Structure formats: structure tokens, C-alpha cells
Image 1 (tube, rainbow, N blue to C red):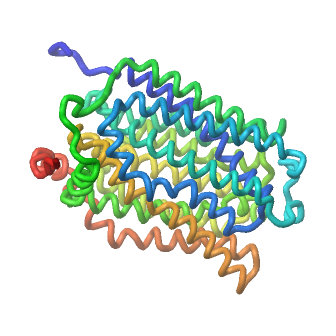
Image 2: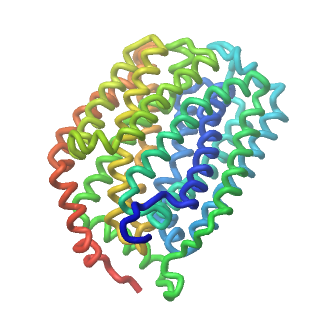
Length: 446
């Protein structure tokens, strides 16, 4: 980069941008396709929550070794392999659903009496597919975040992340769910086939990237246990990131606790059709786009610390309101607000990690951070299912479906008592300034 020239986003960034957006279109289709399929094979809140548990379980069990893999192999090839695997798995689900489609109710006619018992063959396939898809997601997402500093100038990380997430939100929570609902109108298997195709296209786009990113390629690798310990120790020794990871874990646990059985809540409490359920999910797109595009401006105006506090308090309030309403449009609005502050949180915290963690440790520390931050999700999903089962045993079905939202929202707001003193603009500035010291504390391993 010549003197006097401002840094620009690279071609590799735009290829990664295209790959992530197309795969997020598939994720948006899956947002409606997978839960709607689950609701067609069982009406048990606990069993539907278990699908989400299994989907998020790899973040608890596999995120730490995934970081070691990310720091040992070519990151571009790893991302390609993960998306090829997801394309194959999606294709298998599409074929299986097509074969057994005669035994399923019409997607647009699922009601309280339409599903008797549980179709265990499809349910077990759904569990296996979501477990494997979640494992591939861990590899892809951790590697995508890790590779970003290699293709984007440090001064542009917040801009690059914000633009990427805002566009992903449009595909993931606006266009994808609407397209998924339209595909369900054609057949139960159609959305799964298109979902598989998006991962195949995404893999091809990542393969076209020119970067060959393999940290420590010329260094004899240590034992993987030592590499893993290096990442865990680095994060645990970093006072600010350690607390940030724990707080994120609690936030994600409460968030997934409320939404794990969203499909049942939408069908039975809000009375949504597939199209209305898809439209309800698009609320997150509006908030995500605004949050992604204006995150840098907002944090500059009110400060990073206040922005993070706002995420915690506002996020909890939206959960409580969603649990009390009977209008899917109100839930749409709450999703918009929730995703706005969530995107603000992501832009701040991911850009911060990409700035202060040394590249040779980035994959391992990122995976350790996400172990705490995302590993709590399966626990939250299970809690949501248990809350429904316990409440239903002593109260009515509608109250049981509302309780995960209300209880999670109250605890979410109360979390500010722990997070507030630890997430201040001053502490964030100190974390950025102490990058060199943090690197010097990083163990050598071996």
C-alpha cells in the first residue's frame, strides 16, 4: 500500500462476502424449513428443543479442537471442505424428506391435531443431520472469522464486519425465510434441496479466493494438546476477553432458551401460517441491516461500553415483550430491535478480538472464546424445553410456551449487574492498548 493511499477492501474479501451471503441465504431457508419439519414429526416442546440442543452441541464439544485445526491447516481449504460437507448433508435430508413426504401433513395445514405421536425415523434423521451440520458450521464460522484479518486491513475491520453482517442479515432473516415459505408451498423437500445448493455455490466462491492462509506453515507443529492449551491459557490470562466470553455465553444461553421452541410458539400462541412465520422472522433483517451499517457511527457517538450495556438491557426487554404478546407483528418488531443491538455487539466484540489476538493464535483463541460464548446454547435450548415441560405439568399449554421468553428476559436484564462494571469504554480502550503485553504473555507451547 503506497504512502498517502487509504486502505481498501480486497478482492478476497468480496469473494468471502459473496460466499457468506449465499450460504446465509441457505441458512435463512433453513430457519423455516427445519423447525417446520420438526413440528410436522412431533408436537413435543422438549423434543423440538432437543433438535436445537443437538444443533448447537458441537459448539460445546468441538469448538476447542476446531481452533487447533484452524491454526494448523490452510484456512481456505478448510472452509471449502466444511461447505461441501454441508451441501452433501443438505442433499441427503432433501432426498429423505421427499421419500417420506406422503406420511407428512401439508406444510400449510399443520395444526394442533394434525400430528399424532412422533415420526421417529424422520426425527432421528433430523437429529443426526443437525449434529453434523452444526459440526461443519463450527469449522466454517471459526475459520471465516479467523481469516478476516488476513484479507482486511486492521483499520477496516469494523467496516468489513459490519457490511458483511448487515448483508447476511438480509439474506438470513428476510429473503431466506420468505423463500423458504414459498418453497414449502411447492413441497416439503424443496427448501432442503435449495439449502444444499447454496452451500455448494458458497464452497466454489471460497475456492476462488487467492489467499493461502496457513499460519506457522514453516514451523514443526507441537502436540495438538499443547496447541489447545496455548489458546485456552491465552484467553484465560486476558482479563477483559475472559469476562466478555463468559457474558456472551450467558446472553446466548438465555436467547436460545427463549427461541428454541419458536415454531410451536408461532403456531399455537401467535397462530402463524408458514408465510406469517417467515415474515415474523424477517424482523431481524431490518434491525441487523441498520445495526451493521451504523454500528461504527453509534459506538463513536455513545462509546463502546454503553453500546454493550444497551445490548444486554434492550435484549432482555424484547424477550419479555415477545413472551407477553399474542401478535406476531409485535414479535416481528421485537426481533428487529433485538437484532439491531445484537449486531452492534458483534461488530464491536469480533473486531476487537481480530485486532488484539495474534494471528498465530487467532484460530485457537477464537474457538476457545466461542466455546464459552456458543457452548452455552445447547444448555439454553434444553432449559427452554424443560421450562415448557414443567410449566405444562402444572399449568396450561399457552402459559408453558410463554414462560421461556419471560423467564429468560428477566434474567437477561438482571445480567447487567455482573456485566456493567466489566464492559466499560475505558476497559475496552485498555484492552486495545495492552495488545503487546497480551501477546508477550502468550505461551510458546511445544
